[in-house]
Image 1 (cartoon, rainbow, N blue to C red):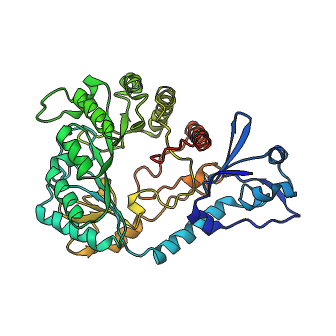
Image 2 (image 1 turned 90 degrees about the horizontal axis):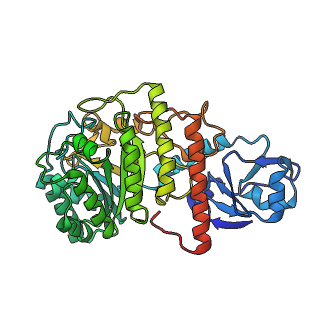
Image 3 (image 1 turned 90 degrees about the vertical axis):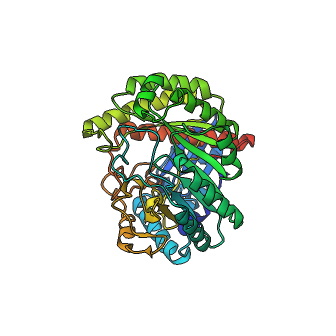
Length: 457
Protein backbone atom coordinates (compact mmCIF):
# COMPACT_ATOMS: atom_id res chain seq x y z
CA UNK A 1 0.00 0.00 0.00
CA UNK A 2 1.43 3.33 -1.08
CA UNK A 3 0.40 6.49 0.78
CA UNK A 4 -0.43 9.34 -1.60
CA UNK A 5 -1.70 11.80 1.00
CA UNK A 6 -1.04 11.42 4.72
CA UNK A 7 -3.87 11.21 7.27
CA UNK A 8 -4.72 14.42 9.13
CA UNK A 9 -2.46 14.44 12.18
CA UNK A 10 -5.11 15.66 14.62
CA UNK A 11 -7.54 12.93 13.55
CA UNK A 12 -4.89 10.21 13.41
CA UNK A 13 -3.85 11.10 16.95
CA UNK A 14 -7.41 10.75 18.21
CA UNK A 15 -8.32 7.52 16.39
CA UNK A 16 -4.95 5.80 16.46
CA UNK A 17 -4.24 2.57 14.61
CA UNK A 18 -6.79 -0.23 14.52
CA UNK A 19 -5.77 -3.37 16.35
CA UNK A 20 -5.61 -6.54 14.24
CA UNK A 21 -7.69 -9.58 15.22
CA UNK A 22 -6.54 -12.61 13.22
CA UNK A 23 -9.79 -14.49 13.83
CA UNK A 24 -11.99 -11.61 12.65
CA UNK A 25 -13.82 -11.30 9.32
CA UNK A 26 -13.31 -7.88 7.73
CA UNK A 27 -15.29 -5.69 5.34
CA UNK A 28 -14.72 -2.28 3.72
CA UNK A 29 -15.53 0.58 6.06
CA UNK A 30 -18.60 2.57 4.97
CA UNK A 31 -16.59 5.82 5.00
CA UNK A 32 -14.10 4.81 2.31
CA UNK A 33 -14.25 6.00 -1.30
CA UNK A 34 -12.84 3.76 -4.00
CA UNK A 35 -11.58 5.46 -7.17
CA UNK A 36 -10.34 3.56 -10.21
CA UNK A 37 -7.83 5.61 -12.19
CA UNK A 38 -6.26 4.02 -15.27
CA UNK A 39 -5.06 0.68 -13.91
CA UNK A 40 -4.70 1.99 -10.34
CA UNK A 41 -7.09 1.44 -7.42
CA UNK A 42 -7.19 4.33 -4.95
CA UNK A 43 -8.84 4.31 -1.54
CA UNK A 44 -9.64 7.51 0.34
CA UNK A 45 -10.50 7.32 4.04
CA UNK A 46 -13.16 9.99 4.61
CA UNK A 47 -12.53 9.95 8.36
CA UNK A 48 -8.75 10.46 8.38
CA UNK A 49 -8.35 12.10 4.96
CA UNK A 50 -5.67 9.57 3.97
CA UNK A 51 -5.35 8.58 0.30
CA UNK A 52 -3.59 5.35 -0.69
CA UNK A 53 -2.82 3.35 -3.82
CA UNK A 54 -3.23 -0.42 -3.53
CA UNK A 55 -0.78 -3.04 -4.74
CA UNK A 56 -1.90 -6.09 -6.73
CA UNK A 57 -2.42 -8.35 -3.71
CA UNK A 58 -4.48 -5.70 -1.90
CA UNK A 59 -6.62 -5.24 -5.02
CA UNK A 60 -7.47 -8.96 -4.89
CA UNK A 61 -8.42 -8.64 -1.22
CA UNK A 62 -10.78 -5.80 -2.07
CA UNK A 63 -12.62 -7.94 -4.64
CA UNK A 64 -13.30 -10.79 -2.20
CA UNK A 65 -14.68 -8.96 0.84
CA UNK A 66 -15.86 -9.76 3.40
CA UNK A 67 -13.19 -12.29 4.29
CA UNK A 68 -11.20 -13.55 7.25
CA UNK A 69 -7.99 -11.73 8.10
CA UNK A 70 -4.79 -12.60 6.26
CA UNK A 71 -1.38 -10.82 6.37
CA UNK A 72 -1.98 -8.98 3.06
CA UNK A 73 -4.69 -7.00 4.85
CA UNK A 74 -2.38 -5.68 7.58
CA UNK A 75 -2.13 -2.02 6.51
CA UNK A 76 -5.69 -1.90 5.27
CA UNK A 77 -6.82 -2.91 8.76
CA UNK A 78 -4.45 -0.78 10.82
CA UNK A 79 -5.37 2.33 8.78
CA UNK A 80 -9.14 1.67 9.17
CA UNK A 81 -9.91 0.88 5.52
CA UNK A 82 -11.13 -2.57 6.54
CA UNK A 83 -13.15 -3.06 9.73
CA UNK A 84 -14.75 -6.06 11.48
CA UNK A 85 -18.19 -7.00 10.18
CA UNK A 86 -19.88 -5.85 13.39
CA UNK A 87 -18.03 -2.52 13.59
CA UNK A 88 -20.15 0.64 14.08
CA UNK A 89 -18.27 3.38 12.21
CA UNK A 90 -21.04 5.93 12.77
CA UNK A 91 -20.70 5.56 16.54
CA UNK A 92 -16.92 5.71 16.22
CA UNK A 93 -17.10 9.03 14.32
CA UNK A 94 -19.42 10.45 17.00
CA UNK A 95 -16.96 9.41 19.72
CA UNK A 96 -14.01 11.02 17.89
CA UNK A 97 -15.98 14.26 17.55
CA UNK A 98 -16.88 14.28 21.24
CA UNK A 99 -13.27 13.65 22.29
CA UNK A 100 -11.98 16.36 19.94
CA UNK A 101 -14.49 18.95 21.12
CA UNK A 102 -13.76 18.16 24.78
CA UNK A 103 -9.99 18.37 24.27
CA UNK A 104 -10.32 21.53 22.20
CA UNK A 105 -12.12 23.36 25.01
CA UNK A 106 -9.48 22.26 27.52
CA UNK A 107 -6.33 22.63 25.45
CA UNK A 108 -6.70 25.45 22.96
CA UNK A 109 -7.51 28.23 25.37
CA UNK A 110 -9.58 31.27 24.56
CA UNK A 111 -7.55 32.82 21.76
CA UNK A 112 -9.38 34.42 18.83
CA UNK A 113 -7.57 34.61 15.52
CA UNK A 114 -10.38 34.82 12.94
CA UNK A 115 -12.60 37.91 12.70
CA UNK A 116 -15.59 38.56 10.47
CA UNK A 117 -15.85 42.34 10.48
CA UNK A 118 -18.71 44.55 9.30
CA UNK A 119 -17.22 48.03 8.77
CA UNK A 120 -20.73 49.08 7.67
CA UNK A 121 -24.23 47.75 7.06
CA UNK A 122 -24.78 50.24 4.23
CA UNK A 123 -24.76 48.85 0.69
CA UNK A 124 -24.65 50.37 -2.78
CA UNK A 125 -26.87 47.55 -4.14
CA UNK A 126 -30.50 46.79 -3.35
CA UNK A 127 -30.98 43.08 -4.09
CA UNK A 128 -34.59 42.02 -3.52
CA UNK A 129 -33.50 38.85 -1.67
CA UNK A 130 -31.06 40.51 0.76
CA UNK A 131 -31.53 39.16 4.28
CA UNK A 132 -30.20 42.45 5.69
CA UNK A 133 -33.16 44.37 4.25
CA UNK A 134 -34.47 45.29 7.70
CA UNK A 135 -31.10 45.84 9.41
CA UNK A 136 -30.34 49.31 10.79
CA UNK A 137 -27.84 51.22 8.62
CA UNK A 138 -24.69 51.90 10.66
CA UNK A 139 -21.06 52.81 9.91
CA UNK A 140 -18.31 51.66 12.30
CA UNK A 141 -16.71 54.66 14.03
CA UNK A 142 -12.99 55.34 14.24
CA UNK A 143 -13.19 54.80 18.01
CA UNK A 144 -14.69 51.33 17.53
CA UNK A 145 -11.99 50.57 14.95
CA UNK A 146 -9.31 51.43 17.54
CA UNK A 147 -11.02 49.21 20.12
CA UNK A 148 -11.06 46.35 17.65
CA UNK A 149 -7.33 46.71 16.94
CA UNK A 150 -6.69 46.55 20.69
CA UNK A 151 -8.97 43.52 21.04
CA UNK A 152 -7.22 41.63 18.23
CA UNK A 153 -3.82 42.37 19.74
CA UNK A 154 -4.93 41.17 23.18
CA UNK A 155 -6.65 37.95 22.10
CA UNK A 156 -4.51 36.43 19.31
CA UNK A 157 -2.01 34.78 21.72
CA UNK A 158 0.83 35.04 19.21
CA UNK A 159 -1.11 33.53 16.31
CA UNK A 160 -1.52 34.90 12.78
CA UNK A 161 -4.87 36.63 12.36
CA UNK A 162 -7.32 36.20 9.48
CA UNK A 163 -9.90 38.87 8.73
CA UNK A 164 -13.01 38.56 6.61
CA UNK A 165 -14.55 41.85 5.54
CA UNK A 166 -18.32 41.68 5.34
CA UNK A 167 -21.25 44.10 5.21
CA UNK A 168 -23.48 45.60 3.83
CA UNK A 169 -20.95 46.20 1.16
CA UNK A 170 -17.60 46.39 2.99
CA UNK A 171 -16.09 48.80 0.45
CA UNK A 172 -18.69 51.38 1.49
CA UNK A 173 -16.79 51.36 4.80
CA UNK A 174 -13.34 51.46 3.24
CA UNK A 175 -11.97 53.96 5.80
CA UNK A 176 -12.32 51.37 8.59
CA UNK A 177 -10.71 48.69 6.43
CA UNK A 178 -7.74 51.01 5.94
CA UNK A 179 -7.62 51.98 9.61
CA UNK A 180 -7.76 48.45 11.03
CA UNK A 181 -5.31 47.04 8.47
CA UNK A 182 -2.85 49.87 9.12
CA UNK A 183 -3.27 49.43 12.88
CA UNK A 184 -2.37 45.75 12.70
CA UNK A 185 0.55 46.52 10.41
CA UNK A 186 1.86 49.20 12.82
CA UNK A 187 1.77 46.68 15.68
CA UNK A 188 3.52 44.09 13.52
CA UNK A 189 0.62 41.65 13.87
CA UNK A 190 0.72 39.15 10.97
CA UNK A 191 -2.62 38.86 9.16
CA UNK A 192 -4.35 37.97 5.92
CA UNK A 193 -7.77 39.02 4.68
CA UNK A 194 -10.71 37.90 2.57
CA UNK A 195 -13.87 39.74 1.58
CA UNK A 196 -17.52 39.18 0.64
CA UNK A 197 -18.30 41.92 -1.88
CA UNK A 198 -20.57 42.70 -4.81
CA UNK A 199 -17.40 43.78 -6.62
CA UNK A 200 -18.71 47.06 -8.07
CA UNK A 201 -16.63 49.57 -6.09
CA UNK A 202 -13.20 48.10 -6.82
CA UNK A 203 -10.82 49.99 -9.11
CA UNK A 204 -7.09 49.91 -9.86
CA UNK A 205 -6.07 52.03 -6.87
CA UNK A 206 -8.27 50.14 -4.39
CA UNK A 207 -6.98 46.79 -5.64
CA UNK A 208 -3.40 48.01 -5.22
CA UNK A 209 -4.26 48.96 -1.63
CA UNK A 210 -5.99 45.63 -1.12
CA UNK A 211 -2.78 43.80 -2.03
CA UNK A 212 -0.28 46.01 -0.19
CA UNK A 213 -2.18 47.11 2.93
CA UNK A 214 -5.17 44.82 3.41
CA UNK A 215 -3.27 41.60 2.58
CA UNK A 216 -6.33 40.51 0.61
CA UNK A 217 -6.04 36.97 -0.75
CA UNK A 218 -9.65 36.04 -1.58
CA UNK A 219 -12.90 37.72 -2.61
CA UNK A 220 -16.36 36.24 -3.05
CA UNK A 221 -18.51 38.05 -5.62
CA UNK A 222 -22.10 37.11 -6.46
CA UNK A 223 -23.57 37.17 -9.96
CA UNK A 224 -27.34 36.80 -10.43
CA UNK A 225 -27.58 36.31 -14.17
CA UNK A 226 -26.50 37.76 -17.49
CA UNK A 227 -26.18 41.51 -17.99
CA UNK A 228 -29.83 42.59 -18.03
CA UNK A 229 -30.89 40.28 -15.20
CA UNK A 230 -27.88 41.16 -13.07
CA UNK A 231 -28.32 44.92 -13.44
CA UNK A 232 -32.02 44.66 -12.63
CA UNK A 233 -31.52 42.46 -9.54
CA UNK A 234 -28.64 44.47 -8.06
CA UNK A 235 -30.41 47.83 -8.58
CA UNK A 236 -27.23 49.76 -7.74
CA UNK A 237 -27.42 53.31 -6.42
CA UNK A 238 -25.31 56.07 -8.04
CA UNK A 239 -24.46 53.98 -11.10
CA UNK A 240 -21.57 55.40 -13.15
CA UNK A 241 -21.43 52.77 -15.87
CA UNK A 242 -22.74 49.31 -16.77
CA UNK A 243 -22.58 47.42 -13.43
CA UNK A 244 -22.34 43.94 -14.95
CA UNK A 245 -19.44 44.84 -17.23
CA UNK A 246 -17.73 46.80 -14.45
CA UNK A 247 -17.88 43.83 -12.05
CA UNK A 248 -16.49 41.44 -14.68
CA UNK A 249 -13.64 43.88 -15.32
CA UNK A 250 -12.93 44.02 -11.58
CA UNK A 251 -12.87 40.22 -11.39
CA UNK A 252 -10.25 40.31 -14.16
CA UNK A 253 -8.24 42.95 -12.26
CA UNK A 254 -8.39 41.11 -8.95
CA UNK A 255 -7.37 37.78 -10.45
CA UNK A 256 -4.53 39.46 -12.38
CA UNK A 257 -3.09 40.42 -8.99
CA UNK A 258 -3.32 36.76 -7.89
CA UNK A 259 -6.27 37.43 -5.60
CA UNK A 260 -8.54 34.40 -5.66
CA UNK A 261 -12.06 35.32 -6.82
CA UNK A 262 -14.86 32.89 -6.03
CA UNK A 263 -17.91 33.70 -8.14
CA UNK A 264 -21.13 32.63 -6.46
CA UNK A 265 -24.08 32.13 -8.81
CA UNK A 266 -27.42 32.54 -7.03
CA UNK A 267 -29.96 30.29 -8.71
CA UNK A 268 -33.73 30.53 -8.34
CA UNK A 269 -36.75 29.93 -10.54
CA UNK A 270 -36.79 33.51 -11.76
CA UNK A 271 -33.30 33.24 -13.31
CA UNK A 272 -32.71 29.52 -13.90
CA UNK A 273 -32.85 29.81 -17.70
CA UNK A 274 -30.75 32.96 -17.72
CA UNK A 275 -28.18 31.31 -15.45
CA UNK A 276 -27.67 28.54 -17.99
CA UNK A 277 -26.50 31.19 -20.47
CA UNK A 278 -24.27 32.87 -17.88
CA UNK A 279 -22.52 29.59 -17.10
CA UNK A 280 -21.49 29.26 -20.73
CA UNK A 281 -20.23 32.87 -20.81
CA UNK A 282 -18.23 32.56 -17.59
CA UNK A 283 -16.88 29.14 -18.51
CA UNK A 284 -15.47 30.55 -21.73
CA UNK A 285 -14.15 33.73 -20.12
CA UNK A 286 -12.38 32.08 -17.17
CA UNK A 287 -11.66 28.56 -18.36
CA UNK A 288 -7.89 29.06 -18.11
CA UNK A 289 -7.84 31.41 -15.12
CA UNK A 290 -6.76 29.47 -12.04
CA UNK A 291 -7.52 32.45 -9.80
CA UNK A 292 -11.24 32.36 -10.60
CA UNK A 293 -13.50 29.66 -9.15
CA UNK A 294 -17.23 29.35 -9.78
CA UNK A 295 -19.98 27.64 -7.77
CA UNK A 296 -23.78 27.66 -7.62
CA UNK A 297 -26.15 28.03 -4.71
CA UNK A 298 -29.80 28.69 -4.08
CA UNK A 299 -31.30 31.69 -2.31
CA UNK A 300 -32.25 31.46 1.35
CA UNK A 301 -35.92 31.02 2.17
CA UNK A 302 -38.15 33.81 3.50
CA UNK A 303 -35.64 36.66 3.46
CA UNK A 304 -35.33 40.01 1.69
CA UNK A 305 -37.38 42.98 0.52
CA UNK A 306 -39.42 40.50 -1.52
CA UNK A 307 -38.93 37.27 0.43
CA UNK A 308 -38.22 34.13 -1.56
CA UNK A 309 -40.18 31.16 -0.27
CA UNK A 310 -39.92 27.55 -1.43
CA UNK A 311 -41.79 24.39 -0.58
CA UNK A 312 -39.88 21.18 0.08
CA UNK A 313 -40.59 19.98 -3.47
CA UNK A 314 -39.36 23.28 -4.92
CA UNK A 315 -36.13 23.04 -2.92
CA UNK A 316 -35.57 19.54 -4.29
CA UNK A 317 -36.26 20.82 -7.81
CA UNK A 318 -33.74 23.64 -7.39
CA UNK A 319 -31.14 21.25 -6.00
CA UNK A 320 -31.53 19.10 -9.11
CA UNK A 321 -31.16 22.15 -11.35
CA UNK A 322 -28.00 23.17 -9.49
CA UNK A 323 -26.62 19.63 -9.83
CA UNK A 324 -27.23 19.73 -13.61
CA UNK A 325 -25.64 23.16 -13.97
CA UNK A 326 -22.66 22.14 -11.86
CA UNK A 327 -22.04 19.17 -14.15
CA UNK A 328 -22.02 21.48 -17.15
CA UNK A 329 -19.77 23.94 -15.38
CA UNK A 330 -17.25 21.19 -14.68
CA UNK A 331 -17.11 20.41 -18.39
CA UNK A 332 -16.13 23.96 -19.37
CA UNK A 333 -14.37 25.36 -16.30
CA UNK A 334 -11.60 23.22 -14.84
CA UNK A 335 -11.41 25.10 -11.53
CA UNK A 336 -14.94 24.36 -10.32
CA UNK A 337 -13.96 21.33 -8.23
CA UNK A 338 -10.49 22.48 -7.24
CA UNK A 339 -10.84 21.51 -3.59
CA UNK A 340 -9.19 18.87 -1.46
CA UNK A 341 -10.96 15.53 -0.81
CA UNK A 342 -13.19 15.16 2.28
CA UNK A 343 -12.23 14.27 5.84
CA UNK A 344 -13.85 14.30 9.28
CA UNK A 345 -15.26 17.71 10.19
CA UNK A 346 -15.70 18.95 13.75
CA UNK A 347 -17.56 22.17 13.01
CA UNK A 348 -19.71 23.76 10.33
CA UNK A 349 -18.63 27.38 10.14
CA UNK A 350 -17.66 30.38 12.22
CA UNK A 351 -20.87 30.04 14.28
CA UNK A 352 -19.55 27.05 16.27
CA UNK A 353 -15.84 27.90 16.06
CA UNK A 354 -14.61 29.07 19.50
CA UNK A 355 -11.73 31.00 17.92
CA UNK A 356 -13.90 33.14 15.63
CA UNK A 357 -16.01 36.19 16.33
CA UNK A 358 -18.17 38.43 14.16
CA UNK A 359 -17.83 42.15 14.91
CA UNK A 360 -20.74 44.41 14.01
CA UNK A 361 -20.31 48.12 13.22
CA UNK A 362 -21.29 49.08 16.79
CA UNK A 363 -18.63 46.73 18.20
CA UNK A 364 -21.05 44.04 19.37
CA UNK A 365 -20.35 40.30 18.98
CA UNK A 366 -22.50 37.75 17.14
CA UNK A 367 -22.03 34.27 15.67
CA UNK A 368 -23.94 34.29 12.36
CA UNK A 369 -24.46 36.98 9.74
CA UNK A 370 -28.09 35.90 9.38
CA UNK A 371 -28.79 36.55 13.05
CA UNK A 372 -26.87 39.76 13.77
CA UNK A 373 -29.83 41.72 15.17
CA UNK A 374 -31.07 38.99 17.55
CA UNK A 375 -27.87 37.13 18.33
CA UNK A 376 -25.66 39.63 20.17
CA UNK A 377 -23.79 37.99 23.04
CA UNK A 378 -21.25 40.68 24.01
CA UNK A 379 -19.16 43.57 22.72
CA UNK A 380 -15.66 45.02 22.48
CA UNK A 381 -16.45 47.10 25.56
CA UNK A 382 -18.19 44.52 27.78
CA UNK A 383 -16.72 41.23 26.58
CA UNK A 384 -18.98 38.14 26.59
CA UNK A 385 -22.26 38.91 28.35
CA UNK A 386 -24.47 35.99 27.24
CA UNK A 387 -22.55 32.68 27.14
CA UNK A 388 -25.79 30.72 26.67
CA UNK A 389 -26.12 32.09 23.14
CA UNK A 390 -22.64 30.79 22.40
CA UNK A 391 -23.56 27.29 23.56
CA UNK A 392 -26.66 27.05 21.37
CA UNK A 393 -24.48 27.31 18.26
CA UNK A 394 -22.62 24.14 19.25
CA UNK A 395 -25.71 21.94 18.97
CA UNK A 396 -25.35 19.72 15.90
CA UNK A 397 -28.09 18.08 13.84
CA UNK A 398 -28.72 14.44 14.76
CA UNK A 399 -28.01 12.40 11.62
CA UNK A 400 -28.48 8.99 13.25
CA UNK A 401 -31.60 8.14 11.24
CA UNK A 402 -30.48 9.67 7.95
CA UNK A 403 -26.79 9.28 7.15
CA UNK A 404 -24.90 6.52 9.03
CA UNK A 405 -23.97 4.59 5.88
CA UNK A 406 -23.37 7.53 3.52
CA UNK A 407 -19.74 7.36 2.41
CA UNK A 408 -19.10 11.08 2.93
CA UNK A 409 -21.04 11.45 6.19
CA UNK A 410 -17.91 12.26 8.28
CA UNK A 411 -17.29 15.34 6.12
CA UNK A 412 -20.83 16.61 6.75
CA UNK A 413 -21.53 18.64 9.85
CA UNK A 414 -24.56 20.86 10.30
CA UNK A 415 -25.89 22.95 13.17
CA UNK A 416 -29.37 22.65 14.63
CA UNK A 417 -29.85 26.43 14.70
CA UNK A 418 -28.59 27.06 11.17
CA UNK A 419 -31.21 27.90 8.55
CA UNK A 420 -29.49 25.58 6.07
CA UNK A 421 -28.87 22.82 8.61
CA UNK A 422 -32.00 20.84 7.79
CA UNK A 423 -32.09 21.11 4.01
CA UNK A 424 -33.08 17.83 2.35
CA UNK A 425 -30.28 15.61 1.05
CA UNK A 426 -31.91 13.83 -1.85
CA UNK A 427 -30.49 10.78 -3.64
CA UNK A 428 -29.52 12.83 -6.71
CA UNK A 429 -27.52 15.24 -4.54
CA UNK A 430 -25.85 12.36 -2.69
CA UNK A 431 -24.80 10.82 -5.99
CA UNK A 432 -23.57 14.17 -7.28
CA UNK A 433 -21.56 14.76 -4.09
CA UNK A 434 -19.97 11.33 -4.30
CA UNK A 435 -18.89 11.90 -7.89
CA UNK A 436 -17.58 15.35 -6.98
CA UNK A 437 -15.46 13.91 -4.17
CA UNK A 438 -14.12 11.16 -6.42
CA UNK A 439 -13.10 13.76 -8.98
CA UNK A 440 -11.24 15.66 -6.26
CA UNK A 441 -9.43 12.44 -5.32
CA UNK A 442 -8.38 11.87 -8.94
CA UNK A 443 -7.20 15.48 -9.19
CA UNK A 444 -5.13 15.17 -6.02
CA UNK A 445 -3.62 11.87 -7.17
CA UNK A 446 -2.56 13.25 -10.56
CA UNK A 447 -1.05 16.38 -8.99
CA UNK A 448 0.82 14.39 -6.36
CA UNK A 449 2.23 12.09 -9.02
CA UNK A 450 3.21 15.01 -11.25
CA UNK A 451 4.46 17.15 -8.39
CA UNK A 452 2.12 19.98 -9.44
CA UNK A 453 -0.23 20.17 -6.46
CA UNK A 454 -1.44 23.74 -5.95
CA UNK A 455 -1.37 24.58 -2.24
CA UNK A 456 -4.06 27.23 -2.83
CA UNK A 457 -6.67 24.50 -2.90
